Image 1 (cartoon, rainbow, N blue to C red):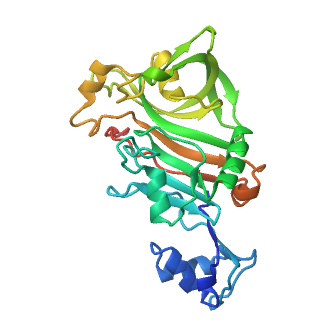
Image 2 (spheres, rainbow, N blue to C red):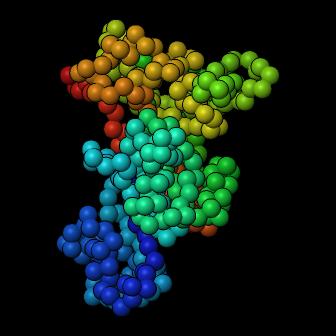
Length: 324
């Protein structure tokens, strides 16, 4: 899977060497890595292969491919990690514990941090994650671009997948084939949202005011008898067909397989038993791990069309060695 990074050369970079501009924008890269990437023909300027000593000029479009297999995990002190950036779009890996917007106490959220850190005062969130959920988020440079991206997401042009740990091994649902050929189990239900309690409820039969929910999942790995009560623990990959508040947490709990560490929809006695050596922090074990950009992506997402960005889920729970 390609990890791509693109940018347009700024006026203050006009006439400077391509390598120098890249190193300024990507201080995490060494000169040797940039030259290696050039030799592999994985750097393009305006769609063409550049020379190693080439200068770039204001407005040139630079694309770097394959610098990393994936975004990896953010370092412990970092609130977020930039995974992909252009002049119009930003994808970041958010740490759990950081709200996406400023809180009532005035503490800055992810959006305010990015607006300040990257000098993007008009940046907008294209979607949201719960405070205690980590992972990938898309931001746009301004409200107009944000509206465009949100529309494409509503049309299903960006498929989001999540990684989570649940109690037990689910088997409910019907088998379906996803857009990329992955086989998953699909479960359905109806969601009741009680805004005043900041909680949702799942029903098997539609009640007045309920919204339909559709969730897909597949089992990545089973950790036998790894739970504190001797139950199995399953690592799931989850895809949302609908995107409702707390959908993954509530839907999996509804079918009897709550997320580990989830104090709202989980099992409190079970979660308390996970503290200490097993889970270092009290929060749901859920990460927004994958963004699939479909070929139909256009406009600000055109450079991502047909590509995938993914991260490793940084679970707090210490996963047992499957070979032991």
